[in-house]
Length: 125
Image 1 (tube, helix red, strand yellow):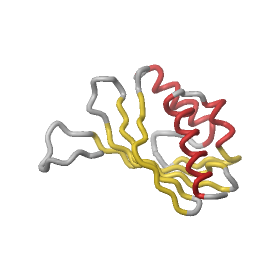
Image 2 (cartoon, one colour):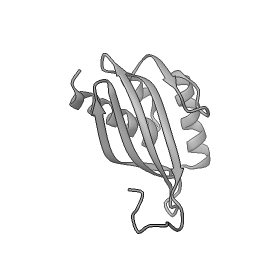
Image 3 (cartoon, one colour):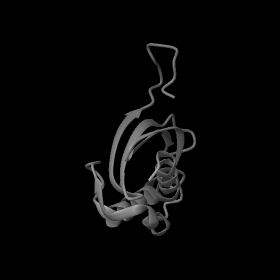
C-alpha cells in the first residue's frame, strides 16, 4: 500500500465511523483484528459499535474535523478538532492508526480539552 492510499483509507474510515457513526460502512476499512488502545473502547467492530451507540445517545451532534494528516509507512496520524456539541470549545485529538494490507488493525489516541485561556496567543490547531 502507498502512503497516499493509507491516508485515504483512514480518512474515509474516520468519516464513516466517527462522524456518520456507521460501523457497517466502516467495516470494509477494518482488518480481521482491530486493537483499540483507548482504555474506554473495546476491541474490534463490536467495541466500535458500542462507542458509536454511546456517542449517539449522549452527543448526537458530535462532530470531528480532521485538520492535518501525516503518514509514514503503515502509520497514519490525524490531528483532529472534536466538538461534542456545536457550541463547545471541544478537544484537540491526535489519532494514530496502523494498517496492514490496506486495513486498519490498530488505533491509539491522545485527547486534550481546548481551554478557555492560554499562556500564549497560539491556538491548539
